[in-house]
Image 1 (cartoon, helix red, strand yellow):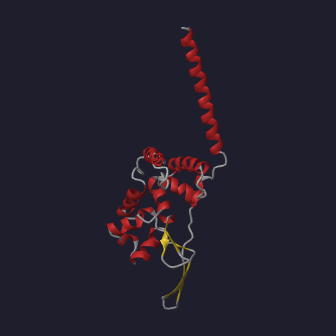
Image 2 (cartoon, helix red, strand yellow):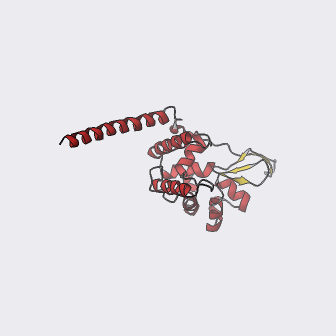
Image 3 (cartoon, one colour):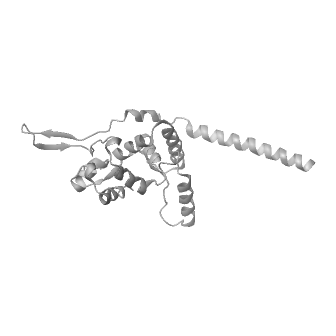
Length: 210
């Protein structure tokens, strides 16, 4: 009976210490997080165009070539291509793909000499691209995950996809002019609008992000 009481006391003490540690870590990483609600007012920089009097396009000016496309105007096949390539459980996880994260951790442990495998889903990439830096630190990854959970609790999956698909970097064809978003990439790579992309063209664009 005495051993049972001692064991129970140790278990309670461990639970208290563990809970306090988790709460402390949560407070530490949550403190000072960027406001995810600012994403509701997302106004991306888009391309400026200069036209002649007869309507001919004379020139385009942009550091980031982008044409904004709302979620409702993005074809389902294009959304599915990026979800398949980047985050297959996007529509079912709460912002963090625990299965994908576990797989990436185990793979990295099993292959220490190889390039580290990432585990950031689409929502986490939105958190990083819009609200955080790209530094490869544990602190940034934890903050990214916390913001991703908050984003998922505030916005619909379609809104998150809209943010992601309009912001994602998809390469550089003309030196000094980066392509951001699927609409600009569709025009420069294929000379098409997003609505005209075939399945294999959408898959090609979905394979471009790092």
